[in-house]
Length: 285
Image (cartoon, rainbow, N blue to C red; front, side):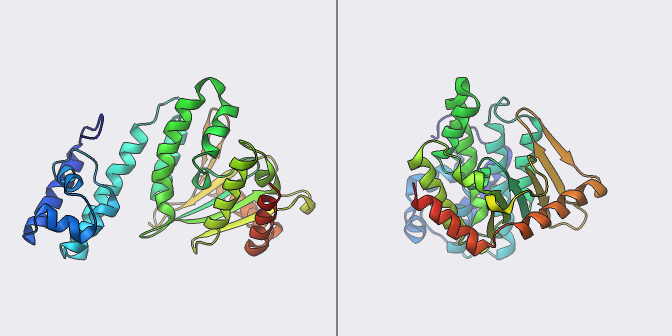
């Protein structure tokens, strides 16, 4: 059994679906496992909800059992929702204060995130080694707890960058972000190489404002703008400081940030030139 796992009602329902799908094709656990490259033990634990069912596993099982798209997608969405709730609930409240918890929830729901950073790599782009390095600098006394929990959450957040309906990211970083030596040269080099990899994704755009660009809009004020698919869900601007987060939702205020973001993108190097600069900095480490 997965340690400390207690299935929710939604997770138990997902398990019943998976078992029903397998039985509808008259597959044994062994046969289904061979089809999707999964152990019988793992399949049994998912069906009996002794471990969470990953959204990707739900899709694989549904396709192997020839489940109609509508039904398969419905269970996939349930698994995605359950995973998101479990990730958020597992984090120490001191690690994510209320506004930041809400932000991660909104990020899971968003279709587009526009982010401007002036000092650290955006959370969605951070490597597993970069996280503890930044945590140690920010809160040395609780660094290890923070790093473990943020690393666990990072895995779930970064799943949105690939796969079905990937999240679109438009990131503008100051050159200081890619030159700030977080965790030492090896950690930073690996982080920059990971940025280069992400920059190749069709849904990810990374731009860097070089030092020589001079003054830029919103100096000293990193922010995120989240957009959503539903036409009745307005954009949300999120601004975070050391111990508090704030949402900007009034139309007039939101527009100030979206206009500034547009201006930042115009000042920044284009995506290709930005990746070249990142590669050059990585190569110097």
